[in-house]
Length: 244
Ligand SMILES: [Mg+2]
Image 1: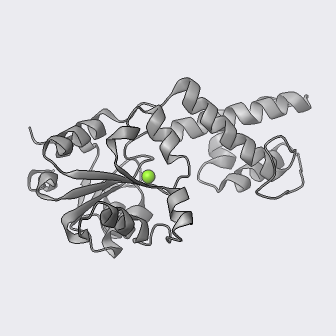
Image 2 (image 1 turned 45 degrees about the vertical axis):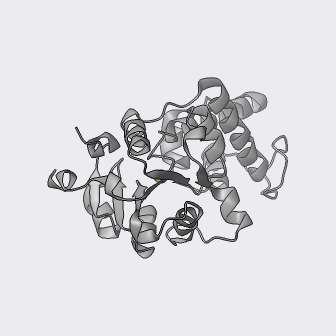
């Protein structure tokens, strides 16, 4: 890839990393959490075959949490009251089961952990040595737990996650606000900072914020679509950006 040879991230003052799909393969953890939650629930009802990975792709993948619950249950002919988002996880409602999945997510993180992408860690190491500041910018409210489980929480002095965004009333991606807040916290101007993202909405946020460089990591979105959405450079693995 010709992009790579002319791209040296250590000429910038800061690099702002998305988390899920950029630093950690978190989709796996979500899949396992859904599986544990649904299978425990189906067991408790009895008379149902187990939830499978195929169910995940057919009914849950990519949907907002409660939609995933409702959609899978409907496939088994189970209808539950909606409940409300603050239903405790032991309540038998769509919201309750959704919240139960979130509890399971934390449990899977604690027991199984999550392994950061080795190439991403090599880049973070490289930037640290070069004196480039780093931050994590994630929509997830579980960002700190994921970083801790991956053993890299202390590598990022600035973390703008879903909780910080809610507290500070920052608009989510594709708005640039969370990335701009992270640059500001690092005391770096946007045009001296790099955004690293695997989602189309994320690279769009990078472009909207007029950052110095937007790096797309292609974990399935597709290099062309990442470029169309705002990526200046697309790599398959962040290790490609570490100078030999
Ligand atoms: Mg992502």
